[in-house]
Image 1: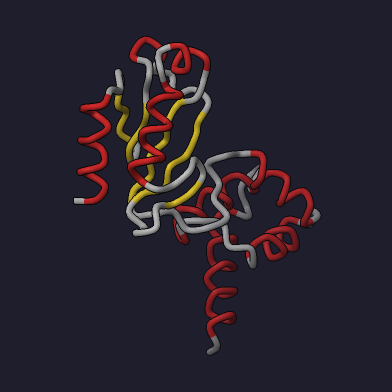
Image 2 (image 1 turned 30 degrees about the vertical axis):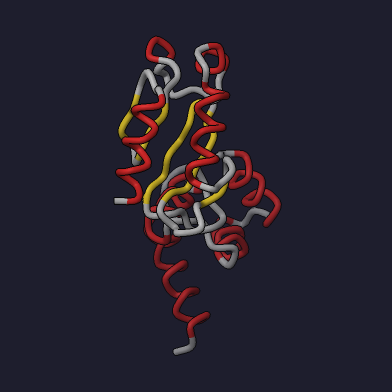
Amino acid sequence: MRETEVLSTRIREVIARSSALEGPLLPILHDMQEHFGHIPSEALPLIADALNISNAEVHGVVSFYHDFRRQPAGRHVLKLCRAESCQSMGSDAIAASLQALLGAELGETSSDGAVTLEAVYCLGLCSCAPAAMLDGMPIGRLNDEKIIDIISQVRG
């Protein structure tokens, strides 16, 4: 079986698991990302066909929600809060430091594949601003020391 056929088979299996649910698009997309680490471009027309909706509708949902990735992420995902509370507490400087140390801009993965740096717009940690989330673990009151610890974790 060719690689594209294997991928299509795996995509169809993921779609089948949730297609009978009410409002199945988001569960399918979450399952797809859990299974592949991102939403493969090959999946969009297969999802649209299975749900009898247009490719544009599937694309619109994938592109609307920031958590859906179109490319595989790095080994770690660092989400840096860019909302007003964190900005007022210095997240711009934190972002600049992280980008310089990782060699990756927000929305990119470091060249060694260690970490994907993402902007998010509120982690619900406003009282601990500036805040971030590393692989789902919240980190509050970011400062230079914590940034160095984060870099050590993702590259260690």
